[in-house]
Image (tube, rainbow, N blue to C red):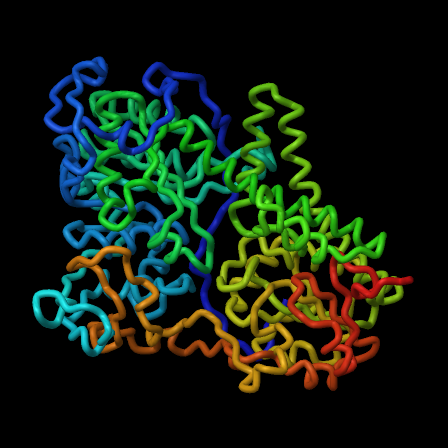
Length: 634
């Protein structure tokens, strides 16, 4: 594979395929499910001034309303001052940064063994592109200066008669000192990778628990005896029992509590999801100590999340809820994609069908957009885990039902690639194919489980002269690493300029729905689109919290930031110049068309281009779910 006119970034996400055993353990009385439905008010109340043992009957628990126990630092006598997040990735850092932002009294440490990744988190070159994340990290990692409200938002009401945004000390730390960070923590979040197993029992479906197992052993060796361990990684149902067994084996006298607190973040909007969550789920054991631990975690969130959105459940319900939520969303994607195949044959328009169906309030319009299917690190993995769980419980019909969601998802990309080959007369020999987009969705630079990989794999069998790849945010190094599974192919080239990548191509495949790929509307005279800002000049007003407090930032200008850590001389990230065009502008499709070769086809896998507008510049569009570009044949 060749990179054209590009300076490579070193990858910050090192992943290995490891093997682990069955992750659906037998039951345990400690984690026996509670028969009652509960919220934070019913599950985590009554936990103050308790001295009873774990098996104390509920009649001994003195009832107390939730507002009385939501003290900033304690829950039933549990004091949380130091929090440790293990794993500096897409889940750990955004969660840690927002918790640090909203709880300035906390000391929040993010630990990872990857020295390169930690170095970048401690620099101006964050390893993850996520809207709003750099602003939160800068304030919590570096601290901030006092700022006049007049300089930020003159219309906001004043507090204490004057400047209402005080200076702030840093309380977010990034380090590689794992043992020390664990030993100092009162609460430890597990935010490590839990990929699908690629070998051994459950291959292709079961969750690889190697990283989780390793972390729990390290926690057992170094943590305080009464530390609270929180599962933040997506894990199979009943993993809490597995964690408890490891703790009891390696630290039999410790009385650590295990909680489940699944994340419901969408890449590209993770910070917004954290600041304004739909719900916070906290699963605990059905014991007094378990509920105490749950209340301590609930208090961290209650500094900015309305208490009605904090749901207390049994730990196994919490673990399963995350898998089911992603499975339900993925199911809708596969459902509408299966209909797109019918539409292409009958002449119906899948977008018109989806709009009509989505108007039913019982169904709704979300996740009913036909396309290439779902990619990324969540849906495929979580449905596989659900399939494996059902099979391990002997529920073969249930497993097959959910497995069909994966089958349809794979089929959609196979149909797309097959259509490309057929429309190019059944052969790609001597032809150049350009691929626009490599991230699994827009507004993120995440290349994991990229949809483009499956498409490229199918196209390579037809021996094209060149497969050109361009993505406005993904570094060529990350793209090439993701393509490593395909082997070394000289015909694959990664470009940093879309016009060079599309020049002399016979067909262009739109794989990611970046706004810059869209055909601009006639009213868009300036030809500018709104993409997430990668610089720190973006206003902080989007991060305003629903409550006013000393830790609330309601529109921080650049003048409030303290200086970022200085880069060393010859910093490789500073030298990297990746973007070959302005990603805030639409592509000039007329310019692209001029330099294309016949038949000048665009295969739109994301419904981002207007067929009529493209026709005017000489490009023919092939779209999923439409017969003859949606023009009825009678």
